[in-house]
Image: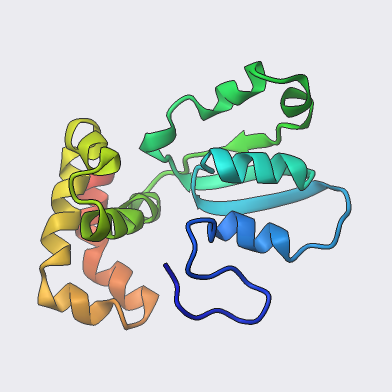
Length: 165
């Protein structure tokens, strides 16, 4: 969890998802003609917040393998079905792989035997192997405090190799 955040922003809570945080800053209104861009496909919490926030569309860079079938929420309730945003994703290419890779570090550090890590062991073992290797790589640890372009440049060939799967 983040231990620091600007006033009025979520921190140090499992509710501090980026989508929840940004939607919480919007004044009430109709955002049907707006698009929310996210790194991962929104989880159930964020998906319902997006519905409640009247956001018209969502673009996500990478799928969240934990929440396969999330779009079936529209089958549960008429309000959800009528307010469900148009969704596009996952995107393709190394940046998409990078977006899927990032949360794996959190899960490897905090829940190394949990459901997410188990899912990646069966669904995407190469990405999980890369996350494990990078987590222990001192060069990557140094990159975590550096520039995003430097990190992507360093990882690009690994990300591109995984993307071709």
